[in-house]
Amino acid sequence: MRTDKHLVLKMFALFLSAILFTQCAEVIDLNNETSGGQLVIAGRITNGGMGNTVEITRTLPEMQAPELISGALVKVIAENGIEEAYIETSPGQYVLNRDIVQGQVGGVYQLQVQLNGKTYTSSMQEMMPIMAQDDLRFELGTLDKVTAAGVPISEDVIRIFANSTLDNLPDEFYIRWTMEEVYNRDGIDLPVNNFPFYSKMRCYITNELSAQEIFLVDGTEIRNVNLNNREVAVRPIDNSFSTKHYFNIIQIALNKEAHSYWKNLQSLTTRQGSIFDTPPAPVLGNIGSSDPLEEVFGFFEASAIDTTRLLVTNNDISVFFLDPCQIEGATARRIRRIPVMCIACLFEEGLVEEECIFCNLLPNSSTIRPSYF
Image 1 (cartoon, rainbow, N blue to C red):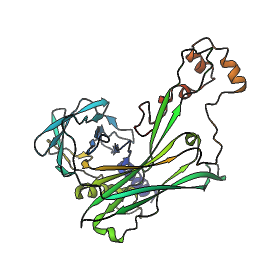
Image 2: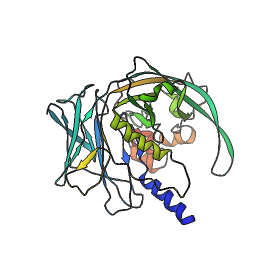
Image 3: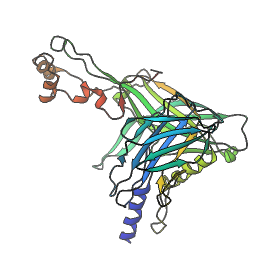
Image 4: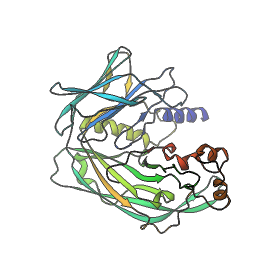
């Protein structure tokens, strides 16, 4: 019994897809127990300037993080034969500049990847139109939880709710939503006398809030679905709310094939049952290899995208924010004795964490300001 349970849980973990949406860009992470693993190609073309990305990875055994694959030739091909290459911006990450191919609703597109003498090709994907008008609101509340030591506590949280209005619906359409948060973090202030040329850094943090949930709607069943007051995120309140804090709901129009793919992933992430049930299998997408014996995971989709934003500021949150980088008292006095412009001395003396100076070291951070900030 214990062996069967361990096997099922391990298989589930190995084949579970973890979806990361960073401004409409996802990472699909599928591990397996084979040496070398399988190739995973996940990407999209959209009708706007964001989310036109492809990520290529290879799964590794024993639950290791996937290997990022560089050096691939990646291009999108429109139905009329016009094509444009995705440019590799970092290992395994490829971005479409839209200099030649601009995704449009009704257009049909295909992805082609050349790597190590093999060609990987997706099925043709039609870009469907946006169907819903989204609206976000928030409520403040508390969440009861138990610490690792077994102590019950209550923490302040913000709950995000979505309403979606759909008019003039066709008989068949499909939608997926994801949630993200974006807020800014600044480097700390340092004494001008000691650091006359120091200029504090400003970073923007983007976190995926729906990585463990896949919000889907099948338009053929929409008349039986309530799309009002859906709780789409619960976020603990912390120092990140001391500045502008955006919650973004991103609506993605799907075709039937893309919906079926995400539905299969959804069934894995929510699957519950007996330990004697058949272990979940990896979800094949719409990408094939020129090698008929090679299995490839991932999906390429052509998706119209619409983003609705909710701004929350510190005026909306009646909670005291403790700045983890605050400098005061004896620490401030010691900093004034640091040699002029010796930033490294701050770290060597243990006076300041590096992230308090270089906020771009924080996870999911960027110094590029989003257009809506």
